[in-house]
Image (cartoon, rainbow, N blue to C red; front, side, top):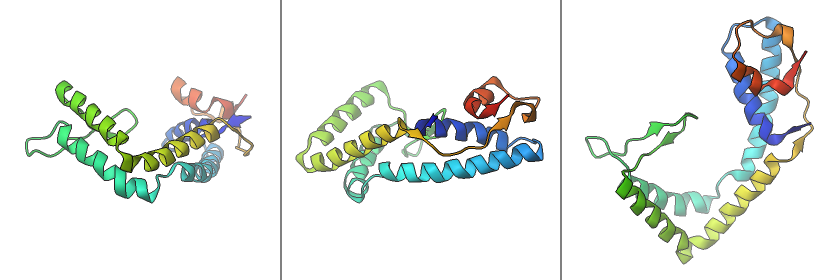
Length: 165
């Protein structure tokens, strides 16, 4: 039985196959599995979607602090970079990182933010519990012999439970 958190790994592995030239039968299984997984993940991610209060009242404060303390380009604009997952992140000089972290703690401790943060913390806890639950969805097995002859160990590892020898 697979867990909900495994779906993210399967999705990553299947997406890496999606971009390769592979046999038609394997292509169909990849597409079917990706569609099933995407539907399931959309439902899971609704649980962790930040509340309107968080997005309207708290998130802008965080963004303001990031803009104040992060490394900026020549024009003085925040300079994001992509991390290993493709997400944009900001870097801080050491002295500004300390100031930023202190400002975040002060923001979190303000009375006006406590309820919003309690709700957000509960959402994240609920989401993490859901990730550890087993999922009974049916995913199409992929026959080992239908895999491309050039596939990385990482790609195999990502979809290992879906491979049928």
